[in-house]
Length: 254
Ligand code: PEP
Image (cartoon, rainbow, N blue to C red; front, side, top):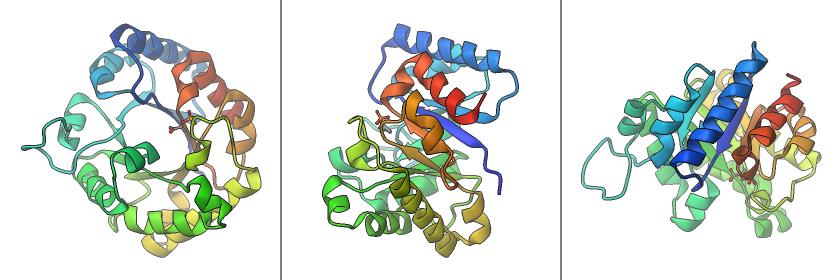
């Protein structure tokens, strides 16, 4: 089953207007130079940069995504952004259930499930994040935790076209620590098995499962060569053009 690699940048809460425009222009320039692309590119800047980044990416095959959304299309939700607004502004993707939102904003898998359904209604693809904490891994519960998060966070209506999964061990995010390839392979295989149980084999075999957590140019080739790893969700290294593009070049041999 051929699944095109997705190289996705999660800029988190970084970038003022000028920096965001420069980063997006830098990425766009490098992607244009590559010509025929063996992978897909996506950047997910903060809400405030979406319009600027969209303009700066013009002409380059780089998709635009947001880092979260509310489940409602509009209404009395001070400070929130709806999927309809994201679609309207030109987003194709939205990250949901990132561990920083699960931990810092108390987001549950059930809420993420409802947000994903709302994203689908607005023709956005959901990148649904799962991953265990260090305590959970040390207790030998990594597979169990990720399986439960998939079962609860992924809607019944998820398909390979509207959903991407990101496995991001919480302890690997922004720490420079990366699981062994054996551990990554084990979790990705368990996730695909769970997706097959929930959504059927055909969807599961075509759905992309990204790895995220301290991905950099030097470890990208090894991680992304694993059978069930279909791309990367990149935090820190997505903020530098050479690192983001270096990851893609090393992983996709482009
Ligand atoms: C992330 O937060 O999605 C992430 C993977 O961060 P980093 O690459 O910095 O570990």
